[in-house]
Length: 123
Length: 107
Figure 1 (tube, rainbow over the protein chains, first blue to last red):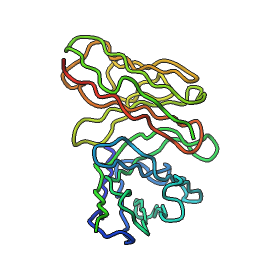
Figure 2: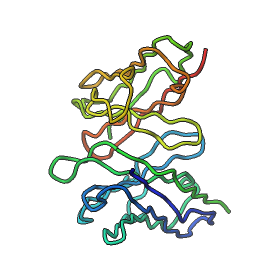
Figure 3: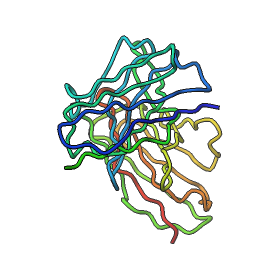
Figure 4: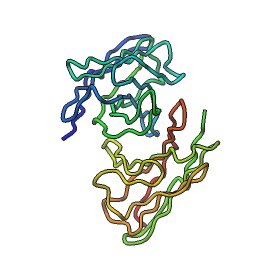
């Protein structure tokens, strides 16, 4: 059974930094691209970032480019999102999701999702 | 950026009835479209990909159709567990974007 377990969320002040993690099990992590998708309170889904299976390619939404960094450790089956210069508008539940596709075929849909970790940015 | 627009925002349906949800893309996305279901307090779940292919373990009452800019998710006979919010998402190019969602509520 595929399991994705996010952790590391919390309450931070504007301008702060945070790293959230996603521990994966039940599938061959190193064979899948992975993504972060967020959901602000009472709002819809918002794609944040995607990383290729090897970690060699990364993609970001314009709203987080230059502030967030996605990475992965395939030896630990873990996905990360380093978030810097946080803003109030970054307040959301952050979901990790396994992602179909890759650099050759294009990145596609989100297969399996974790339960999310809450990040709140407030003074 | 491709903008995905879903309609209606809320759909009131009685159990056993058919529900038809629409998703429109601001430019053609071919068949590069997925649908998700999200229940309160839960993560989204993949229902449909490539516009019309059901994901693993998704019941046959869920069907997707369309291509280009117009897409439809149909739930043939609503069950109690189907009342939720539904999102479409394109994957034609970057950035990947979602529609604003359609809430299917009990009439």
